[in-house]
Amino acid sequence: MTDIEVFYELKKSVLEHYKKRYPYFDGNWKSFSSQDILNLIDDVQENTKNSVSEKWIYTHLKPETNEKLPRKDMLDIFSQYVGKETWNEYKFVFLNQTKKAQKKNKASSKTKYWILGFAIIVLFLFLFWRTKQSENKTKTIELNEKYSNDSISSQTTKAFVVEDSVLTEIAIENSKIEVKENAKVIVKGPFYEERIVDLQKTPEIKKVVLEPNDYANILHGFIKSDIKDWQTRKEQLDKILDGNVEVIVMLQNNLGAEYFNKEEFSQKVIIPTPSLKQLQIVEIKKNTENKIIFIRLVKR
Image (cartoon, rainbow, N blue to C red):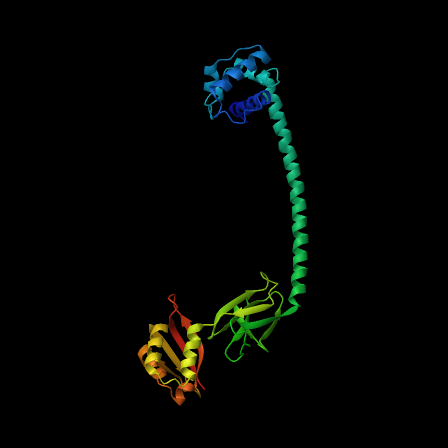
Protein backbone atom coordinates (compact mmCIF):
# COMPACT_ATOMS: atom_id res chain seq x y z
CA MET A 1 0.00 0.00 0.00
CA THR A 2 1.43 3.43 -0.98
CA ASP A 3 1.80 6.45 1.30
CA ILE A 4 -0.88 8.26 -0.72
CA GLU A 5 -3.32 5.42 0.00
CA VAL A 6 -2.50 5.61 3.71
CA PHE A 7 -3.04 9.38 3.53
CA TYR A 8 -6.54 8.76 2.20
CA GLU A 9 -7.19 6.66 5.29
CA LEU A 10 -5.85 9.49 7.47
CA LYS A 11 -8.31 11.85 5.78
CA LYS A 12 -11.13 9.42 6.68
CA SER A 13 -9.88 9.25 10.27
CA VAL A 14 -9.77 13.07 10.52
CA LEU A 15 -13.34 13.31 9.20
CA GLU A 16 -14.56 10.64 11.66
CA HIS A 17 -12.82 12.43 14.53
CA TYR A 18 -14.41 15.72 13.50
CA LYS A 19 -17.87 14.09 13.45
CA LYS A 20 -17.37 12.97 17.05
CA ARG A 21 -16.63 16.58 18.01
CA TYR A 22 -19.47 17.96 15.87
CA PRO A 23 -22.07 15.17 15.65
CA TYR A 24 -24.54 17.32 13.76
CA PHE A 25 -22.22 17.16 10.71
CA ASP A 26 -23.14 14.13 8.57
CA GLY A 27 -21.39 14.83 5.28
CA ASN A 28 -18.03 14.22 3.61
CA TRP A 29 -15.04 16.31 2.52
CA LYS A 30 -16.92 17.44 -0.57
CA SER A 31 -19.70 18.92 1.56
CA PHE A 32 -17.27 20.28 4.16
CA SER A 33 -18.22 23.99 4.42
CA SER A 34 -16.11 27.05 5.23
CA GLN A 35 -17.58 27.03 8.74
CA ASP A 36 -16.63 23.35 9.12
CA ILE A 37 -13.07 24.27 8.11
CA LEU A 38 -12.93 26.99 10.78
CA ASN A 39 -14.29 24.52 13.34
CA LEU A 40 -11.65 21.96 12.33
CA ILE A 41 -8.85 24.52 12.62
CA ASP A 42 -9.99 25.38 16.15
CA ASP A 43 -10.33 21.73 17.10
CA VAL A 44 -6.84 20.88 15.81
CA GLN A 45 -5.40 23.87 17.69
CA GLU A 46 -7.12 22.77 20.90
CA ASN A 47 -6.05 19.10 20.62
CA THR A 48 -2.49 19.39 19.22
CA LYS A 49 -1.46 22.97 20.07
CA ASN A 50 -0.57 23.40 16.38
CA SER A 51 -2.00 25.68 13.75
CA VAL A 52 -3.17 24.76 10.25
CA SER A 53 -4.35 27.07 7.49
CA GLU A 54 -7.58 27.15 5.55
CA LYS A 55 -5.57 26.94 2.33
CA TRP A 56 -3.89 23.71 3.44
CA ILE A 57 -7.25 22.10 4.19
CA TYR A 58 -8.65 23.25 0.85
CA THR A 59 -5.52 21.95 -0.92
CA HIS A 60 -5.06 18.59 0.78
CA LEU A 61 -8.19 17.47 2.66
CA LYS A 62 -11.07 18.73 0.50
CA PRO A 63 -10.00 17.14 -2.85
CA GLU A 64 -11.18 13.61 -3.62
CA THR A 65 -7.77 12.72 -5.12
CA ASN A 66 -4.28 13.85 -4.15
CA GLU A 67 -1.35 13.79 -6.53
CA LYS A 68 1.36 14.44 -3.93
CA LEU A 69 1.82 13.56 -0.28
CA PRO A 70 1.68 16.65 2.02
CA ARG A 71 4.66 17.68 4.14
CA LYS A 72 5.46 15.29 6.98
CA ASP A 73 5.07 17.98 9.68
CA MET A 74 1.44 18.49 8.62
CA LEU A 75 0.90 14.74 8.49
CA ASP A 76 2.24 14.54 12.05
CA ILE A 77 -0.23 17.22 13.21
CA PHE A 78 -3.27 15.43 11.82
CA SER A 79 -1.98 12.05 13.03
CA GLN A 80 -1.85 13.57 16.51
CA TYR A 81 -5.37 14.93 15.99
CA VAL A 82 -6.68 11.37 15.50
CA GLY A 83 -4.76 9.97 18.49
CA LYS A 84 -1.31 8.96 17.22
CA GLU A 85 2.03 10.55 18.07
CA THR A 86 3.35 10.88 14.53
CA TRP A 87 2.58 10.12 10.91
CA ASN A 88 4.96 7.15 11.08
CA GLU A 89 3.01 5.67 14.00
CA TYR A 90 -0.31 6.19 12.22
CA LYS A 91 1.05 4.48 9.09
CA PHE A 92 2.60 1.62 11.08
CA VAL A 93 -0.58 0.92 13.07
CA PHE A 94 -2.83 1.14 10.02
CA LEU A 95 -0.68 -1.17 7.89
CA ASN A 96 -0.46 -3.75 10.68
CA GLN A 97 -4.20 -3.67 11.18
CA THR A 98 -4.70 -4.08 7.44
CA LYS A 99 -2.39 -7.12 7.30
CA LYS A 100 -4.14 -8.75 10.26
CA ALA A 101 -7.53 -8.09 8.73
CA GLN A 102 -6.40 -9.61 5.42
CA LYS A 103 -5.09 -12.73 7.14
CA LYS A 104 -8.27 -13.04 9.15
CA ASN A 105 -10.39 -12.56 6.05
CA LYS A 106 -8.41 -15.22 4.17
CA ALA A 107 -8.83 -17.71 7.02
CA SER A 108 -12.48 -16.79 7.36
CA SER A 109 -12.99 -17.10 3.61
CA LYS A 110 -11.47 -20.60 3.57
CA THR A 111 -13.76 -21.66 6.40
CA LYS A 112 -16.76 -20.14 4.65
CA TYR A 113 -15.87 -21.91 1.42
CA TRP A 114 -15.67 -25.27 3.22
CA ILE A 115 -18.98 -24.67 4.96
CA LEU A 116 -20.60 -23.42 1.75
CA GLY A 117 -19.29 -26.37 -0.23
CA PHE A 118 -20.55 -28.84 2.36
CA ALA A 119 -23.94 -27.08 2.47
CA ILE A 120 -24.22 -27.19 -1.32
CA ILE A 121 -23.49 -30.92 -1.37
CA VAL A 122 -26.09 -31.58 1.35
CA LEU A 123 -28.65 -29.39 -0.45
CA PHE A 124 -27.95 -31.13 -3.75
CA LEU A 125 -28.43 -34.56 -2.19
CA PHE A 126 -31.65 -33.41 -0.51
CA LEU A 127 -33.05 -31.95 -3.74
CA PHE A 128 -32.05 -35.08 -5.63
CA TRP A 129 -33.90 -37.20 -3.06
CA ARG A 130 -36.95 -34.92 -3.20
CA THR A 131 -36.95 -35.04 -6.99
CA LYS A 132 -36.87 -38.81 -7.00
CA GLN A 133 -39.70 -38.88 -4.47
CA SER A 134 -41.85 -36.47 -6.48
CA GLU A 135 -41.25 -38.36 -9.72
CA ASN A 136 -43.20 -41.28 -8.33
CA LYS A 137 -46.17 -39.23 -7.10
CA THR A 138 -49.10 -38.30 -9.31
CA LYS A 139 -51.96 -35.86 -9.09
CA THR A 140 -55.28 -35.42 -10.86
CA ILE A 141 -56.03 -32.19 -12.73
CA GLU A 142 -59.55 -31.30 -13.79
CA LEU A 143 -60.17 -29.64 -17.16
CA ASN A 144 -63.08 -27.21 -17.52
CA GLU A 145 -64.47 -24.99 -20.24
CA LYS A 146 -64.31 -21.40 -19.01
CA TYR A 147 -67.84 -20.15 -19.62
CA SER A 148 -70.12 -23.17 -19.86
CA ASN A 149 -68.16 -25.39 -17.46
CA ASP A 150 -68.88 -28.23 -19.92
CA SER A 151 -66.87 -31.43 -19.92
CA ILE A 152 -63.90 -31.58 -22.27
CA SER A 153 -64.09 -33.91 -25.25
CA SER A 154 -61.04 -36.15 -25.62
CA GLN A 155 -61.92 -36.46 -29.32
CA THR A 156 -61.03 -32.85 -30.11
CA THR A 157 -58.90 -31.80 -27.12
CA LYS A 158 -55.56 -33.42 -26.38
CA ALA A 159 -53.22 -33.32 -23.38
CA PHE A 160 -49.45 -33.86 -23.58
CA VAL A 161 -46.63 -34.20 -21.08
CA VAL A 162 -43.45 -32.35 -22.11
CA GLU A 163 -40.13 -34.01 -21.29
CA ASP A 164 -36.92 -32.72 -22.90
CA SER A 165 -38.99 -30.98 -25.60
CA VAL A 166 -40.71 -34.30 -26.45
CA LEU A 167 -44.53 -34.34 -26.28
CA THR A 168 -46.18 -37.54 -25.04
CA GLU A 169 -49.97 -37.71 -25.23
CA ILE A 170 -51.84 -38.65 -22.08
CA ALA A 171 -55.46 -39.74 -21.72
CA ILE A 172 -58.31 -37.35 -20.87
CA GLU A 173 -60.96 -39.25 -18.95
CA ASN A 174 -64.10 -37.58 -17.61
CA SER A 175 -62.44 -34.18 -18.20
CA LYS A 176 -59.50 -35.15 -15.99
CA ILE A 177 -55.86 -36.02 -16.53
CA GLU A 178 -53.47 -37.96 -14.27
CA VAL A 179 -49.88 -36.65 -14.27
CA LYS A 180 -46.72 -36.74 -12.17
CA GLU A 181 -46.49 -34.00 -9.55
CA ASN A 182 -43.57 -32.25 -11.25
CA ALA A 183 -44.80 -32.59 -14.84
CA LYS A 184 -45.10 -29.92 -17.51
CA VAL A 185 -48.41 -30.30 -19.36
CA ILE A 186 -49.81 -28.82 -22.56
CA VAL A 187 -53.56 -28.95 -23.24
CA LYS A 188 -54.61 -27.95 -26.74
CA GLY A 189 -57.24 -28.46 -29.38
CA PRO A 190 -58.87 -26.48 -32.18
CA PHE A 191 -61.70 -25.18 -29.99
CA TYR A 192 -59.60 -23.89 -27.07
CA GLU A 193 -56.61 -21.64 -26.60
CA GLU A 194 -53.51 -23.64 -25.77
CA ARG A 195 -52.69 -23.91 -22.03
CA ILE A 196 -49.27 -24.76 -20.59
CA VAL A 197 -49.07 -25.83 -16.96
CA ASP A 198 -45.70 -26.29 -15.21
CA LEU A 199 -46.38 -28.12 -11.94
CA GLN A 200 -42.84 -27.46 -10.72
CA LYS A 201 -43.62 -23.73 -10.72
CA THR A 202 -47.30 -23.98 -9.75
CA PRO A 203 -47.73 -27.25 -7.80
CA GLU A 204 -50.97 -26.04 -6.20
CA ILE A 205 -52.94 -26.22 -9.47
CA LYS A 206 -55.84 -28.67 -9.36
CA LYS A 207 -57.99 -27.31 -12.18
CA VAL A 208 -57.18 -25.95 -15.65
CA VAL A 209 -59.77 -23.63 -17.17
CA LEU A 210 -59.70 -23.62 -20.98
CA GLU A 211 -60.42 -20.41 -22.88
CA PRO A 212 -62.65 -21.05 -25.93
CA ASN A 213 -61.24 -20.25 -29.37
CA ASP A 214 -64.22 -18.16 -30.47
CA TYR A 215 -63.51 -18.18 -34.20
CA ALA A 216 -63.01 -21.94 -34.24
CA ASN A 217 -66.34 -22.42 -32.51
CA ILE A 218 -68.05 -20.04 -34.95
CA LEU A 219 -66.59 -21.96 -37.88
CA HIS A 220 -67.64 -25.27 -36.31
CA GLY A 221 -71.17 -23.89 -36.01
CA PHE A 222 -71.19 -22.97 -39.69
CA ILE A 223 -70.11 -26.46 -40.70
CA LYS A 224 -72.61 -28.32 -38.53
CA SER A 225 -75.66 -26.06 -38.71
CA ASP A 226 -78.49 -25.80 -41.25
CA ILE A 227 -78.55 -22.00 -41.48
CA LYS A 228 -79.75 -20.94 -44.90
CA ASP A 229 -78.77 -17.24 -44.66
CA TRP A 230 -75.67 -17.56 -46.85
CA GLN A 231 -75.14 -13.79 -47.06
CA THR A 232 -74.75 -13.53 -43.25
CA ARG A 233 -72.39 -16.49 -43.29
CA LYS A 234 -70.29 -14.87 -45.99
CA GLU A 235 -69.97 -11.59 -44.09
CA GLN A 236 -69.04 -13.36 -40.86
CA LEU A 237 -66.50 -15.58 -42.60
CA ASP A 238 -64.89 -12.51 -44.14
CA LYS A 239 -64.38 -11.09 -40.63
CA ILE A 240 -62.75 -14.13 -39.13
CA LEU A 241 -60.70 -15.45 -42.07
CA ASP A 242 -57.46 -13.82 -43.15
CA GLY A 243 -57.20 -12.96 -46.85
CA ASN A 244 -54.37 -15.47 -47.26
CA VAL A 245 -55.93 -18.25 -45.22
CA GLU A 246 -54.92 -21.79 -46.23
CA VAL A 247 -57.35 -24.66 -45.76
CA ILE A 248 -56.31 -28.31 -45.89
CA VAL A 249 -58.94 -31.09 -45.94
CA MET A 250 -57.49 -34.53 -45.16
CA LEU A 251 -59.25 -37.25 -47.15
CA GLN A 252 -60.13 -40.76 -45.94
CA ASN A 253 -58.36 -43.97 -46.87
CA ASN A 254 -55.01 -42.23 -47.44
CA LEU A 255 -56.30 -40.47 -50.53
CA GLY A 256 -54.31 -37.34 -49.72
CA ALA A 257 -55.68 -33.87 -49.11
CA GLU A 258 -57.55 -31.03 -50.75
CA TYR A 259 -56.39 -27.41 -50.67
CA PHE A 260 -58.69 -24.37 -50.55
CA ASN A 261 -58.01 -20.64 -50.50
CA LYS A 262 -60.29 -18.16 -48.76
CA GLU A 263 -62.71 -17.71 -51.65
CA GLU A 264 -62.99 -21.44 -52.35
CA PHE A 265 -63.46 -22.38 -48.72
CA SER A 266 -65.99 -19.60 -48.06
CA GLN A 267 -68.01 -20.76 -51.06
CA LYS A 268 -68.00 -24.29 -49.64
CA VAL A 269 -69.08 -23.20 -46.14
CA ILE A 270 -71.82 -20.67 -46.88
CA ILE A 271 -74.03 -23.32 -48.45
CA PRO A 272 -74.79 -26.24 -46.05
CA THR A 273 -74.40 -29.65 -47.67
CA PRO A 274 -74.18 -33.21 -46.32
CA SER A 275 -70.49 -33.38 -47.32
CA LEU A 276 -69.78 -30.16 -45.41
CA LYS A 277 -71.18 -31.66 -42.22
CA GLN A 278 -68.73 -34.55 -42.56
CA LEU A 279 -65.81 -32.20 -41.98
CA GLN A 280 -64.19 -32.08 -38.53
CA ILE A 281 -61.86 -29.25 -37.49
CA VAL A 282 -58.58 -30.61 -36.07
CA GLU A 283 -56.30 -27.56 -36.19
CA ILE A 284 -56.64 -23.79 -36.43
CA LYS A 285 -53.93 -21.10 -36.40
CA LYS A 286 -54.44 -17.36 -36.00
CA ASN A 287 -52.21 -14.38 -36.76
CA THR A 288 -51.40 -11.40 -34.53
CA GLU A 289 -54.57 -9.67 -35.72
CA ASN A 290 -56.60 -12.62 -34.38
CA LYS A 291 -57.68 -13.74 -37.84
CA ILE A 292 -57.57 -17.38 -38.94
CA ILE A 293 -54.62 -18.05 -41.28
CA PHE A 294 -54.66 -21.86 -41.35
CA ILE A 295 -57.38 -24.56 -41.00
CA ARG A 296 -56.92 -28.31 -41.08
CA LEU A 297 -60.03 -30.47 -41.38
CA VAL A 298 -60.62 -34.20 -41.55
CA LYS A 299 -63.37 -35.75 -43.64
CA ARG A 300 -65.19 -38.27 -41.43
